[in-house]
Image (cartoon, rainbow, N blue to C red):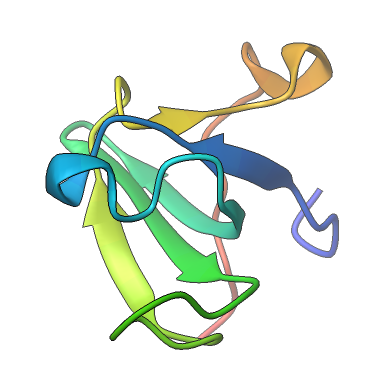
Length: 73
């Protein structure tokens, strides 16, 4: 699971500035998700890492109930 790239969609964040953008899930926690942007838009650049709530980051249906993701440090 740790090597699986999970790509989701950003919704309703920063007044719509990132709506519909693809982002790679880095980690999950009780307070939301840490994601890496897969593309650039405006002042946000590909590779930027941002924190999103569960309502702001839409996971693909086949990954919604997965166990918490952990990455090796």
